[in-house]
Length: 405
Length: 133
Image (cartoon, each protein chain N blue to C red):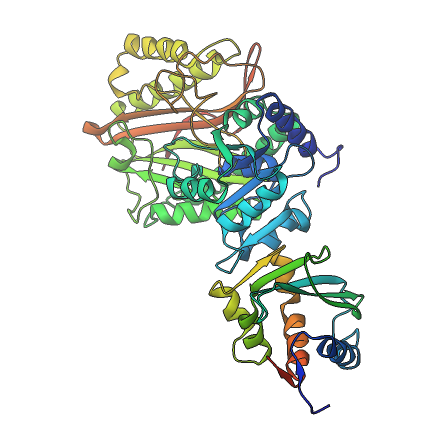
């Protein structure tokens, strides 16, 4: 566990007490978390295998994970080995029986309310309880009531503490090192014969040398797109391919780092020379709208207000046809990469367009410019911290679209 | 000792204690401090029994065989008498019994894995006791 003076310190025992206070208010006896974001937020450890965290009404939580990773998680987490259990296909040790037994011991005569995490997400590793798991837990805990309670975590995790923000700051510094390594490698003809996968790898190598734990995005790690792949209609997901970088084409570099579960995510764009006037026109449009978006983000604004203003600007300048009309996605400690705010919008489990941003919310300022008919597109992503009078972009890599000779 | 004693009887318990004390010195038990209770369901007389072991810094400290609730232990292993008897007779490995669900382990499996080889040593000693089941 990090020390309070450590810039990356997070008061995890306080987080647990805050959850328990809310459980008490909602008459929940045990909270059974299964989402990756909940595991990160409560255990301070990356849990790549199916995992659960059982939080009693008082005292420490216990993590349950696939046995092959339990000792490592106990080593990484602030929790000791008595609070990290491994499950495996053995009598009494499969995840359902082990966790149900554990919860039964916490309940009085097996009776009580158990908070679970049920819902849906576009993010595949979200980790909501599956239908099968729900049925099995319900059968193994016949006298308990299972109630959906993930909003408890969502509310508490919304505003970021200083330690969390500092972890994101460090992850962004690492991403900037990756971008510099890519620039150095592709400059002065270095791009010739280079593939997207190779660029993804050299960025990863530079970031790993700088301390990144992995290229965390489930979209294929580092996303690299060149030529027509930068401009997929309405697209914003480009796992690197074996395509070679070519002269006269755009190149989009969207790389990811992780530092103590804080996530770096920054996209930077190039034009491989020779560059046409039309390509420069697109690039200038893109850079201008990114600047305007960054200047507009602040506490009090909503996603829909911001989108309206930005699309109005794009319309005025004549490039609205090329803008994907979204300017953000959610972000938090590893596993939290989906909607903004809470599940309180008109479409369940999507971002509420009327969510009012508050100070110290963290999000990815994200936008995609795509002109498929001209085989050109650009992407911007950067974690930003919302302040009362503006926002703080965490990646400091200079904004621009550079020509590579 | 060559004459057979009844499995889980007081005589068997005494012999088990003697052999565990003499054949498993603390170093052989990795100086471990732990406790375990085997819970035997459906014994031949229809009753349930438990066998409770405790080691202190590798030294054999306690062996209790009785009916009713076992003392608090770090691990509980529950199964039918016949299953435990097969394991003691080396007809079935404890690992296979666990993996097929014939035995149920309650306790932290990561810790249990660290102690698996010690449990094997213990079972091997118990298997040497001439017993009738």
